[in-house]
Amino acid sequence: MVAPILDVCDLSVVRSGKTIIKDICLTVDEGEFVGIVGPNGSGKSTFLLAILGVLRTHSGTISIYGNPPRSRNLHRRIGWVSQAASNLPRDVKLTVRELVRLGTLHSGNIFDISDNGRREKTLRAIEMVGLEDVQNTNISRLSGGQKQRAVIARALATEADFILLDEPLVGIDRDSRNSFLKLLDGLCHDQGKTILMVSHDLTAISQTAHRMIFLEETIRFDGPTNRFPDLERLADLRGIEGVHDYDWNVNKNQGA
Ligand SMILES: Nc1ncnc2c1ncn2[C@@H]1O[C@H](COP(=O)(O)OP(=O)(O)OP(=O)(O)O)[C@@H](O)[C@H]1O
Ligand SMILES: [Mg+2]
Image (tube, rainbow, N blue to C red; front, top):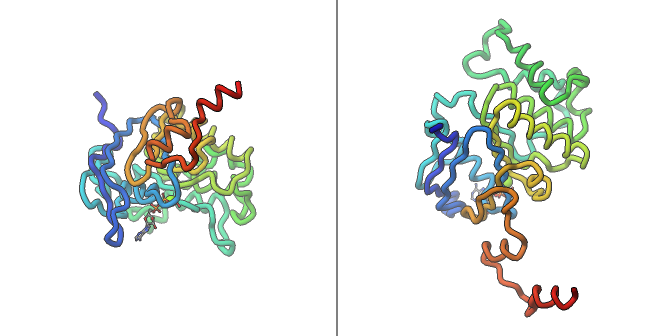
């Protein structure tokens, strides 16, 4: 049996004395595209930051490729696109190629002046996201969708197989969003990447992810996308009670 890429067991994370997420249990296998949704402040980014080892676990364990977060063995195996990663400062003067090339740098080669295949890795990542035509363009001149692709390419240039994305759909128009989701789908199916993506855009993410997680302090739903709960069941899972004395089913039937 192949070991999962991510194995999280009874995880809780405390920030400034407050429990933000708790009792999280989850395994993710190679090639899965998992979408994480949940309301604002429900702990989605906190969860990703704990996987990355930026935040400490309060209790429970996280294992990535069989290693704890921040293990040396995970070096360059995890790609991360942070929330608002494409909101790059306007005064940053970098071309797409230069930005993506940054993804090939790490502590072991930062002072290495030889190319060591970095040019090739950069170009391959740019091709994967379809930005060849604008590779010499300054990133400040790109559209929102192109910027998202550029920051994904930077993550791909690290050659990571496990990619974490936090709200990559924010600020991109409908057409760009659709082609961006196709790109992510292709990365899973054709390149064998494993993707964990947080998004508010439930409709968009459910068109692409194989599996969906609803996170609100803890995991309230985890299952195939086509089993994602409807609004009524979701309210139930979240412990939200209806404020109107109204039976939807009775009224639906009467209206039919
Ligand atoms: N440094 C911090 N100290 C204390 N609490 C924090 C800290 N950072 C975030 N929080 C709180 O943790 C909770 C979860 O935040 P988090 O950013 O993980 O939510 P999120 O689900 O990613 O929200 P959003 O959808 O708005 O991005 C929020 O209530 C937030 O206020
Ligand atoms: Mg967040």
